[in-house]
Image (cartoon, rainbow, N blue to C red; front, side, top):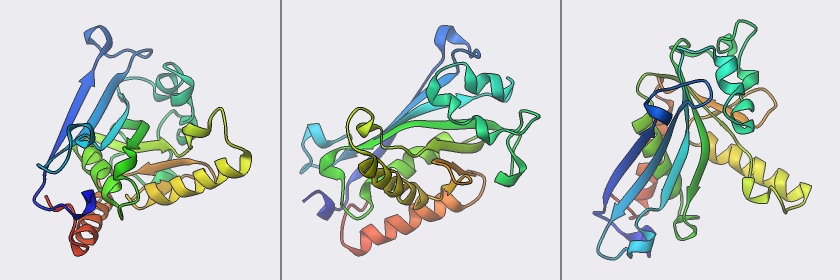
Length: 208
């Protein structure tokens, strides 16, 4: 069983891409993070259990224009800005003048799901590697797998579950929306990762 393994090697691989070699309003920095888990009992097709991707919006640009330019997905986050195009004071950020990191997609392989927080733990490790120089991390907690199927009840249940999942990594819900934010300059993410690590180890599983 995957969740019963110990002494595994966990590696976080981060790739950052700039279109044409420089950051522009239409082409912000994109990033992609993977958690790679090595153990003799884990087959190759299950060795990359968690992936996260998104954008990093530079404070060198007007944030309102930066969010509105790349795609509909980034425009979801416009409510985070005040009338002066700064991140809202109500977010109570330690460094509100720093870059904004957007989580566009996050996923874990089916075999790594429902293992008592292993997938969330790995995603937390990925996010921690990305947050240097970042003032806030934001995501839109929506079950995109139901975008073209799923009835309203299923979608609402999926949204509620995602609020719970991301909340366990220290994210806070923004007003009464599906937007969630995290201040990486507090201990919230580190504490969440450590609590998940201890919980997993207490069950005798996945110790790195």
